[in-house]
Length: 162
Image 1 (cartoon, rainbow, N blue to C red):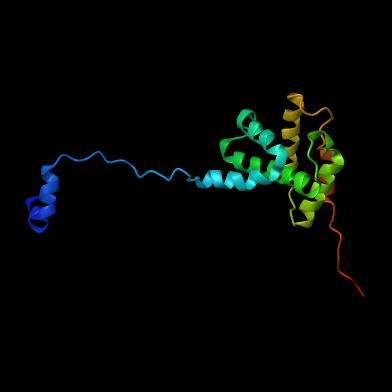
Image 2 (cartoon, rainbow, N blue to C red):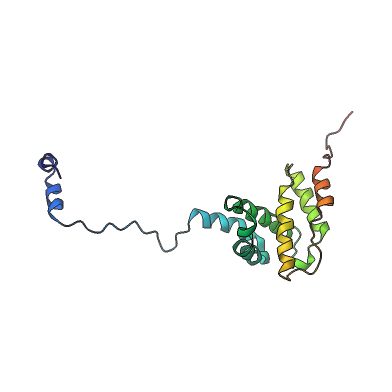
């Protein structure tokens, strides 16, 4: 430490004479939740009984099917469908999901202003995994020919013309 600094700050002399205490990084409170964990909770909490399945998929299968930067979007798209199924349709069992369920979700997305159907691919891939795991005994409820056409169909106009 320079002598000039010690002249202006006598406390610096004392600290210079003592060995440096180990610098510990600040510790978070025991109940602290990271921003990423908080986001995950907001996304997954409303998915009800489907949450463990989504979490398992995101841990076991999704990392080998998607690049790391896409995993948050994948989780979001699957969770969005599961929130719709659980909260809007009151479906609590995977076996109750049919292609008509996906059609209703597509219609809802269109009504909300979504114009892309990329979420259908993520949802179809999720159901392929669910079927591979023996957790769903039906064919894939995402039928690309049907649901992509539905997503791309012209919107009905609600305006009244004279």
